Image 1 (cartoon, rainbow, N blue to C red):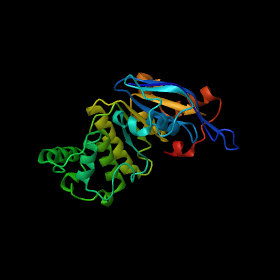
Image 2 (cartoon, helix red, strand yellow):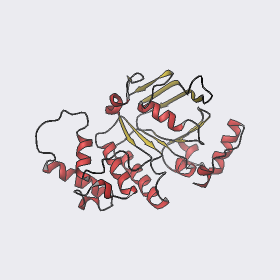
Image 3 (cartoon, rainbow, N blue to C red):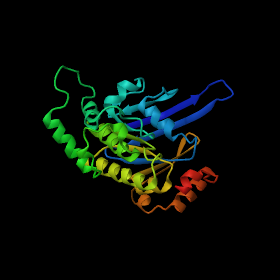
Length: 264
């Protein structure tokens, strides 16, 4: 479903701030894979995800989604293939619009606009059912403005919006980093549920080692713009944080020093 082939990305080329963010990254995701991506600050996690999303062009290499080469496509032209949930709960939704209006926008993505009633009765019924599945009481607040929701509620709505039209690939960009631990656990639980029920292919960037181990069927670790570990199957199920730290040190020859990841 996703082929990342030998991609490179360097920022601020030729200046004192030159930074090689991706250094020959190659990664293949099969349909239904749920891959968690872990690494310290500056490892290249978000840069890789943003490269897939088309936020910026890569210097070399190729990115193929479901057999379609999207390497040269700008961000908006990749949108039909992708669903995305951002780190900031304020992104991904329109605060001044109602919950049901945000869902309707997501449902109409890629369609031509016409003069007709904004949201039909059947659509409202569908949205109510979807919101009820979140178990957050939002099905009774469909006319509430999204800006009035808590961060966790907003991320849950964004998750629904990102998967309303089944994307080829779901990108979760540290989507629980700004939430308190209890709310983050709830949003991760919802993420697991939505991904499993829709058989989605997903990539989740996280700083939290425990979350990276517990969620998904595959774990990728990055360091200095390269993938240094790719763990799946039974090996991943048996992993502990201590095992992961040891593997990192064996492969990279250095200690993992991200306090945020360790404490998480």
